[in-house]
Image 1 (tube, helix red, strand yellow):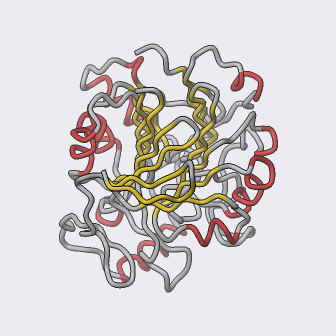
Image 2 (cartoon, one colour):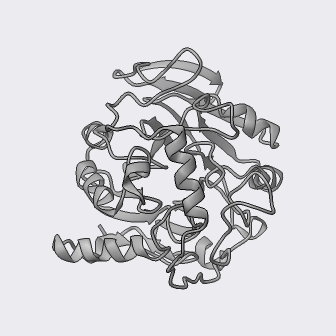
Length: 337
């Protein structure tokens, strides 16, 4: 691997398969073939209008309070604690890694409109037992909460590891230590190695900045143990590629929600069937469901992704003990397999 030195103790490593096929003159793109027909702007506008008035059939979901002392003293060497949506606190040995931290009541640029949190937040930032590293997959409001970044920076001063061109947003929110990575680059910090890897998605924070900042998935290595964080993604051959690059993945955190209608969502969000196939492609031992049950982002009922996953597990005769489909606030010990 080639390397770029950032400081005496941090340097970016470049994987031998590194390439820039996902780069454009002004930003980034998905390098995989798009499904046809591709939805246009009028299609998107029409769906958003109909979605706003669609009658919903959501069953109530609940969270459980997360006890910081339980997290800190979890009996397993490694554990995962679901805060909701794609926000997960990983405890790896004595270190804490926080994924896509969103603690706001709405996934929106404004506090009075946009998708609201449908279940109670199980823990506040100030009550977390620790945060050593924050990993960000991309800049959408249901994954990047700048108020949370400011609070995390103020209390814990963690290292923020983000895809290319996301650093300015983090620094403007108060982050002091930020590392930007491209796909197939990595950095070692806090006794772990963080690999930035492909995802099939897009980015924007406003109306005029589409795909100017990179989106990504990540693989985290800790003493030979591997966790793959898919971020937000549609299905593509990158899952198989990552499985070949990193054989023996122990935990795969994979999105299962925000997938209807398929004609609109298929390019950027996997459905439960594709999430299951991604799990198989990756060759991972355990599955941890994310990106569901928290914000209403698509047409399916809030509880439907979990129901479909449970049905798939039965149909495919999978070992249910390898699947973590939790209530917000619940935890999973990861030392069994």
